Amino acid sequence: ETGVTQTPRHLVMGMTNKKSLKCEQHLGHNAMYWYKQSAKKPLELMFVYSLEERVENNSVPSRFSPECPNSSHLFLHLHTLQPEDSALYLCASSHSPPEVEIYNEQFFGPGTRLTVL
Amino acid sequence: TQLLEQSPQFLSIQEGENLTVYCNSSSVFSSLQWYRQEPGEGPVLLVTVVTGGEVKKLKRLTFQFGDARKDSSLHITAAQPGDTGLYLCAGMYSGGGADGLTFGKGTHLIIQP
Image (cartoon, rainbow over all chains, first blue to last red; front, side, top):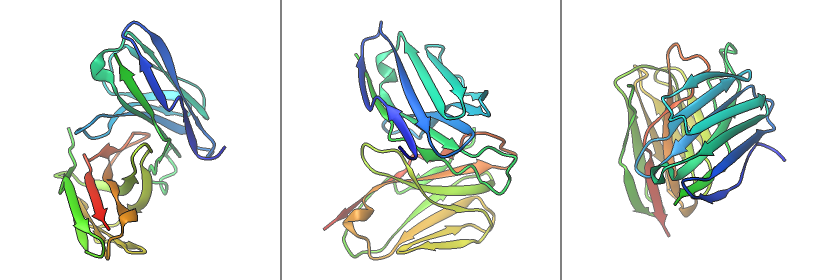
């Protein structure tokens, strides 16, 4: 496997379910990100992990819970979601500053298309 | 909140035509990137521009960074159906550490054969 992979690619869940999204990167990066992409909205940054520590949490509801066990893996745990959480969830990775010559160029996975019923 | 405005939001043209899409902000970027996203896939990085006034070319695509580093444009020459996709600009603002990028809403481009 190369690049950034995400599983599952599609997920349908009820509001009372608990599920997890998985992301894995094979690029030797040390920063990983979760984004939400909804129709007619810009990509919304949800969480940032750098060197396995969470460095940003953009006011995301607690029904989304990230986990980064190591620099290659990132999870997004989901519980009691709402229909408005239906979206494409994208994982990305990059090198982390202070390597200043690296301008946070991010490599994205294919995303998980989530539908909440 | 820092915003990136992209225009046009939608563009549909015939194969062989030229086009330009724009990305604007009131804030200064330390760097700006352009991505292309196809349906069912994640965005793929096309280019990073760093220096004000910089111009980069990628085959038929020409990227320009404004002198003040607040805006950028993407020009496509002789567009082909394979250029169809969502074009996203994303900026990193000065002082950003291990932060994610700020994205625009994108330009949906359709090239008709």
